Image (cartoon, rainbow, N blue to C red; front, top):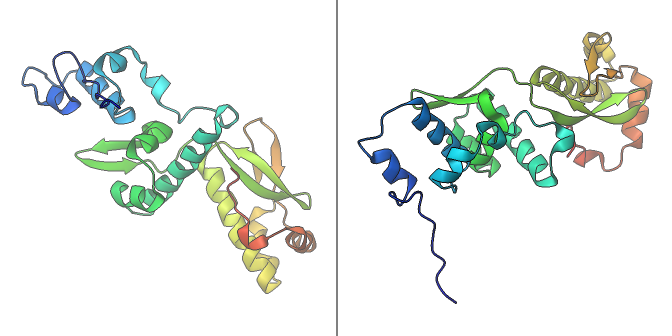
Length: 216
């Protein structure tokens, strides 16, 4: 079998690094755009990056229902990186812990992550869709959450449910009684706070120890 030849970055430059090192290239909006696109799609050639709109590379605004199975896995991994970074971890450590490529995370987080003065930072809020489980009307339901604020609320809710069921004290659920979550379809949801119904849900759950709040 013959050796597979790696495609050059452009007609003049063998690699993206060579292109960047060219002294004739100044920091214009064009070069910024190419650098941004290259970070999202590092295997693309210069001509491919030129003709590809940035929004075609970013997946952060893509609806959950439109994601492929591979993209769903990538988004969940990217959201885990985002969670770690919001807790104070840097990007490199977070990528290593989750086992995901930086280009994948950049595509799925979009403007939620940015490089400022050589340091990667994330915003405290996002509107990236993710599917999560909730308890509602005495059963487990799966809904698409539209923002990080509601996602954090669901996470807090399940922590409160766990403590409530183990202690038989529903005081921690009081804060969730009048909260409404609106899903991606505009439907309203009320979190289950009735202690007896929570016990029933827990008993009905199969393999409780493997239950995940995020639904892939």
